[in-house]
Length: 227
Image 1 (cartoon, helix red, strand yellow):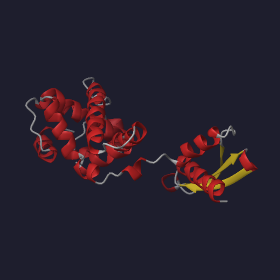
Image 2 (cartoon, helix red, strand yellow):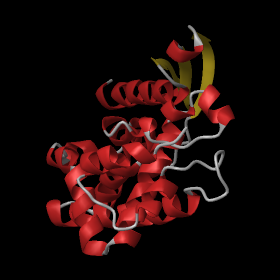
Image 3 (cartoon, helix red, strand yellow):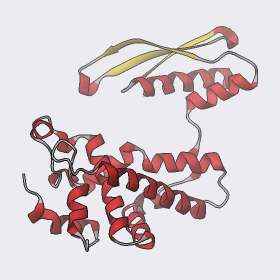
Image 4 (cartoon, helix red, strand yellow):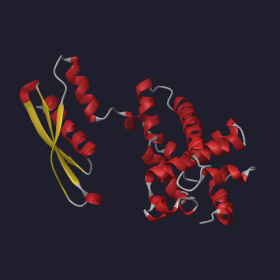
């Protein structure tokens, strides 16, 4: 499908007018559609985004340590965050995909949309300069940056549990999926967490294996610390 007639609409949503519209077209082109695809721009955009967010967080949280800043940055640049912004921009309507990806719903896939968003950042950088792309990114991230707090930079339960055990010379936790239920798009997982310390074994549950492991680790920590 042709996306050229729609690019003016997207540029209004981005609040950026490209001098070289071919850069935007390339940023929206998946490798399944053309040999001139967006992967190089995505690589560049990933690096530019990371540096902009890192500098903003450094300025925004002057008392945060390196670990807190790193966790906040990861929260803002991970695939889920990029996918959400891409959805807000309705990028799926502008992607150029091969027939196979079109049929399989690639215009809704998180990995494809998040990569396209990073490619657009790379395209804006090449089309302008660092100061312009910095303003572009911070504008798109404005509400997310405003809602950030250092509470969001706390280490996850799995990390906290492992560090607590290591500090006391105890063994590392072991996680095992016990069972799962539900359809693929709405599964629930149950995972056990075992630690040598006090011979504890507790189950956790969640919508993914990772979330179930975090739940189990959180329960183990609560048991250890609060009895």
